[in-house]
Image 1 (cartoon, rainbow, N blue to C red):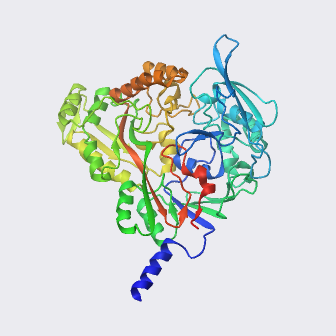
Image 2 (image 1 turned 90 degrees about the horizontal axis):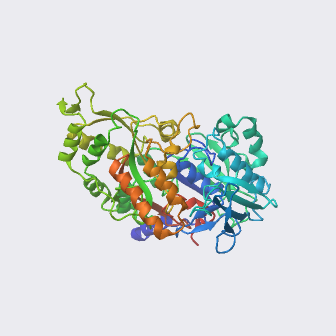
Image 3 (image 1 turned 90 degrees about the vertical axis):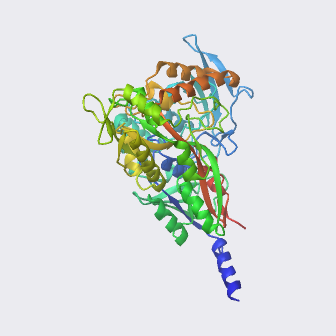
Length: 548
């Protein structure tokens, strides 16, 4: 009887006696802003996936699909076509039809004016959007009716119908705020001053309450026309310490930890050994790669020899073998091995301590004082090294890298900050020397915002762009420009290969590894579909529900 009772208790833990109508999700970061166009942060994207829908997205099968449009326009179906522009150059005309039943959470329909405001905000040079390049390429938008948009762009690109980052901003709420003063809009947007306003959201849920730094409450959008979501309330609890995140899951304080932004891989592997009866474990190879940005405006880090030496000084293979049991691959470029345009012969700057020491000597750091290299002017080879505080795995990796660099005479001083500070000002305003974090991308995602020289954030451009290292390389700029204009995938491959080669050879960034996202899902919960790219599983939140 005691054995039977224990078995029943374990079964009850795995499958609740009655269907749950509330869900508490654990997240390791709190968004720095809720505005969909301002700042780039995984936590924000994860939450907004439940409450907003962009025009298009890549699905779990890596196919471009409509979310807010009726049909994906293509050259083949007549929804897109080449056009001759007034200056004689060639551009693209693409027609989108907004879903007839697309509605904001306050009952107002999603209309063409919302798309027009999005464009106006995006192309304004001082509005503070993360990347305005895509919006500035749009020469005009025609609106023959409230649900039809005809975009004319200034060039032909292979991404002509990818509007996955084209967010609708509700004009009936935000136009007055923006037009009052575009340059200060980022500090006055309703997404941060009136976050619980239902009219800001057009997805299956809407945000109804925010406790800054702690929690976000979501409730169903009564005007959502898609599949009715199951949960009457979703609580997003932010627990920045990964050990505390695990403790809260096991105690039942939270039901599920976000697969994309929760447990570290080593943590999930250890948890699986103890809790396989309660949870399903799925390790999803992704296009997300952990890396370290070098600030290329730092007087020492400007020298490519120093950067290459810092790469050669690290044994990344041993690091990933010891920490991840072979489930995460060492990265030598920004492009993941699952991506169809990943180059197979990217130069490898492998572990070679002797080579690292020789490069440092060439760069003038040829003397060692108390274990740290110095140059003739007495400058120490010493840097500040930051990442997101509270992430146990990142902090473990930091310490391992610190130890390995020390063997080469390189000192790094760890200085971590909460994610909202690290991403809010630390990276976006380039206030770092070495910064470790992760980039997510979509399949064949053109790296304009992260590598093109025009995308270096500065006060002059309103801190737009995500070229945080400060890469200034004419060949990269030209290659990115050529890449976007080439519609033939076979002809894009050699361009992609050249970009990846330059990236590896110049060591503007130190790639660490491609992550496998650990999805630890309670056995009673179904419908969560990992994507492996930057458009998260929350874009399918309406399918999340208890098992029958």
